Length: 607
Image 1 (cartoon, one colour):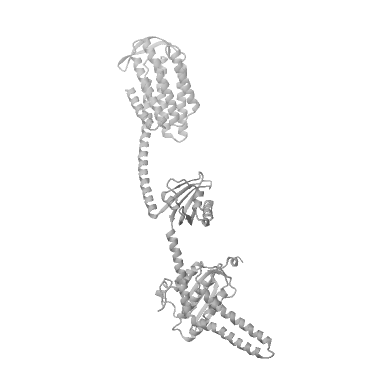
Image 2 (cartoon, helix red, strand yellow):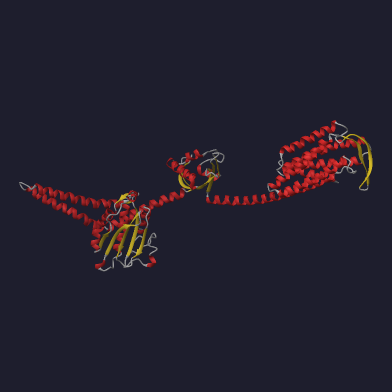
């Protein structure tokens, strides 16, 4: 029965090892169980031996089973508990091998030099045989080896306990020490004649086999549960992966991962398609940089370097040149991973095609410039009569000075000093007319932002000069205050003049029903913190209706009967392009006020 149980356990654990070649504990247990089964068979044969020679021969081959038991048990304890002194385990295996060799070379076997006779005794209700003869002194080698085995098991159990693996130390180490002690004690006692019973050490070893088999079985069950949980986790992970894949495909994103230590790059098929790489094409970071537009390479490389120096994330927009020669805009953002020492080791990122968005933005900017141009032309039409009057004044003065100069030149001795004064007046009037025409041409031009330092006082003064005649015709008083000692701002003169001109004209339009003595537009300028200047255009009109105050900057919203509703939205776009802000409010004393901020030139801030 013991042999059958051991062989069954041996077969089960051997199959486990066949499925998992790293399960060396299972194969060592299989050898231990096979050795126990073989020794049990030898014990049974010795009990039923008919002659001393048969008893001696069975006992001799029983030591082969003992060698298998001792060697596999020492290896199992060392491997399963991950404890015990290796040199002691090798010593046990060496002594047991020596004992096995002596078993075949000295006497009839390792225990007897000669078995003289067999004696019958009663054991568990049956008659069995025990041997009497001359003991072999080399039997002490075997007994010393068994003693070292007990010491090794105790040492491994203690070490495992101290390491915190108390369950295995108690279940495997404790049971191994207990059952091996009784099996050794029983065998030694029988051979030295202390007890008159047959050798039944396999019964104690069988107890050890059962305990070890139970532990391995528990491990197998736990492994099966973990495998099932792993399968469930993998199924869940696969589902999450499919969802992520669907989300990425729906968002039209491409994913790439760069291993900085091994200089390897992994990318999805979508990412490869975005950058013009084939599904199986090999590439590295340098080849990716070569796909970028020459003007964007250094910027993108610098962005990644800054992300790797501590900020950990990056975001960039750049152009790539496809192998076909086409141009594509790419938007990318990602994150850098660092090791414990703070060294960047991995870059993960996503990229998507933003060509359509960039083209739409460019088209929108173009349309905004066109509308701004139309607005300027429309405004110039409104100011045409006033500007004509403004130009006629210097032209009329030039004409009168020319006529006077002709009269002086008709004299026989003309007064040259007077002629020189007349010519200076002509030059001055000519420059005045030229300035008026220059401002008109500047406002009528289609042009991009040309930012440079702008003097606030000159900016306001030029626009006020431009509307002076129109204001006089409308009987509106234009006042300027607080423009002295302000630092220069950074912006485009023509576009800023357009904003200021639009706001002043809107302010005059708002005074249509105001009283004659209180028709006033005031332009003020003051510092708005350490980095900006605020310019305000206020009027003394009725103000903005409260229900329309939040909508006046919406495109095509207007309170004028003939207005387009694009003037204020264009003004806000221009100010925001200058990194400022434009807002409207009603004044406490009546009327409306439009305020916009402009950044101060950096050199002025430093001073």
